[in-house]
Image (cartoon, rainbow, N blue to C red; front, top):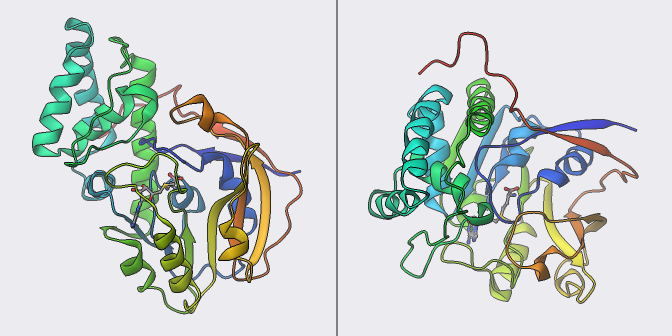
Length: 305
Ligand SMILES: C[S@@+](CC[C@H](N)C(=O)[O-])C[C@H]1O[C@@H](n2cnc3c(N)ncnc32)[C@H](O)[C@@H]1O
């Protein structure tokens, strides 16, 4: 049995596929010489673990894209993040947690990517949720000492990991709708799609309708390269009827998966995950994985600021 170590990125989001990474890696087609295209990048955990040489990572949420562009340009480095989280974390302690709302107001006014990191790592349950006007509205996790040294080191190591992956390849982060991203695909590219699941965690940047699902299938049916689609198969109460109505002409693999990030108990029921492909993928019986927490040590001599 293979044991994979999955690297965890600095941003958390609903539906993050950390636990599915080994499975996705195991079923990739042999030729990865083209561009890795991800129209719904979310946290980016899949691409940052596959580590393709060329990647187009896109999302309709501009704050995710701004954050990763800030790492790509060097505006956010592990060293700068450490300094920022130490200073802002101290204010969180001094105000018994109230300072979270000062940062949230500031972020909703200016959209600064490092404020997004602060909020994402100190909000309730690591949620990303925006109101109808596009304002971040998740409450605080109510832990004034949230940014303890161990967490800051872990986050900085996660930023360093992303920075290392980006600097070794040709990575583009784009804020756009999935149809524009899919239309960029050429022969020998690979598209990995992880759209929001219908009825789960909808918000300003993250709504998903039957029409969107049908539009996605129509676009993927015409691409000149392999694709992998993540979706859900069934849980205790319901099954995903689109598997039969829209996706039945493709290959289907299923696997049990348990979500840890996200709102209500209802969403924490075991979910049978599915991968749909337009090529014959390997059947993978058993994979064991460890998530690398990256929290113990900083590099000797600290980070470059
Ligand atoms: C399930 S999440 C992706 C999670 C990601 N695979 C991960 O492991 O972190 C779905 C993403 O799709 C994005 N999204 C929603 N509607 C979109 C659209 N119409 N076009 C592009 N991205 C969209 C959301 O902002 C969200 O980040």
